[in-house]
Amino acid sequence: MIEGLLQTLLNGAASGGVYALVALGYTLVFSVLGVINFAQGALFSIGGYLTYLLMGGRIGVNGALPGWGLASGLPFGMALLLAAGGSGLVALLVERVAFAPLRRRGAEPLLALITSLGAGVVLVNLLQILMGAEGYAFPQAAEALAGLPDALVIAGARIRTIQLLLLLVSAAAVLVLTLWLERSRNGQALRAVAEDPSTAQLLGINSEAMVRLSFFISGALAGLGGGLIGVSVSLPGPYFGIGYGLKGLAVLVLGGLGSVPGAIAGGLLMGLAEAVVPTEASGWRDALAFAILFAVLLLRPSGLLGRRTVEKV
Image (cartoon, rainbow, N blue to C red; front, top):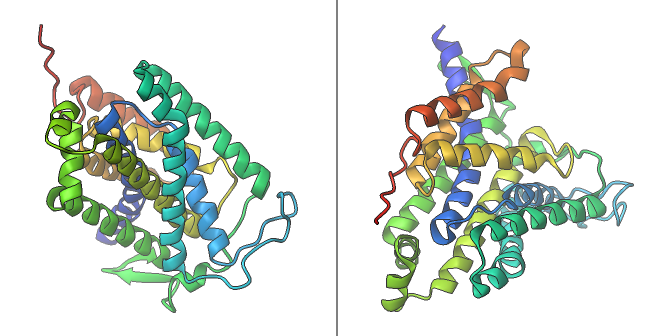
C-alpha cells in the first residue's frame, strides 16, 4: 500500500516537473509582455530532437538529410544543456520575427498570440521536413544513466532511473531559476519589467533586453523538458511537443497567470492527477487533469496562486 503510494507520487512528480518547466516558460513571457507564446510546444519538440542529434542520433530515411549525424555523440548532460541553449536561440528568433514588429507598432496582444501560433506551426513543419515524420528512439539512453541500473527501489517502490533523473533535473532547473529571479541583478530587473515596464524603463532598465532574455529562458526551459521527455519515452514525431505545450498552458492557468510558484504547484498537481489514474484507464488521464483545472477555476478563477486583478475606474 505505502510502496504503491510512493511510486505514484514519484511518477506524478516526474511528469509534473516537466509540465512545470513548460509552464514557467509561458509564465516568463506572459509576465513581461502579457501575451502567451504558443510556439512553446514547438520549442519543446526542437529540444527533444536536438538532444537526440547531439547524443549521436542520425536522421531517418524520410528526413531532408537521411543518415546525417554527428561523427561522435556527446554525453547526455552536455547534449541536454546545448539543446536547451539551441531552443533558447530559436525562441529569440521567434521573438524577433513574430513579436518585435507587432510590439513596435503597438498592435493588439491578440495579434501577437496569433503570430506565435503561426510561428509554432512553421517550426514544427520545418522540423518534420528535416527529420521526417517517423518516431525516433534514443539508443544512447542507457548512457544517460552513467552506469546506473535501469530501475531503483526506494522504500519498496520501484521507479525507473530515467524517471528519477527527469525529476531531479526538473527540480534543479526550477530551483536555479527561482534563485536567479530572486537574487540576481538581471532576475530582479526582469521582475521589475514584469511588474511595471514604464517605471522600470525610467529606472534605467533596458526593457527590450529583458524581453529577449525572457524569451531565451522560456525557450531553454522548453528545450530542457523536450530533451528529458525524449530520452525517457522516445520521440514519437515532430508534433509530440504540442501536447506538452497544451498541458503547460493548462498548468499556467491552473497555477495562476504570471505566478512562478503557481506554475510549479500547478505542474505537480497536474502530474499527480495523471499518476493516480490506473494503467488500464490511461485514456482518462487527460480528462481527469483538465477536470481538476475546470474545478479549480470555478472555485478560484485567478488560479491556485494567482493574484486577483483590480480594475481602476
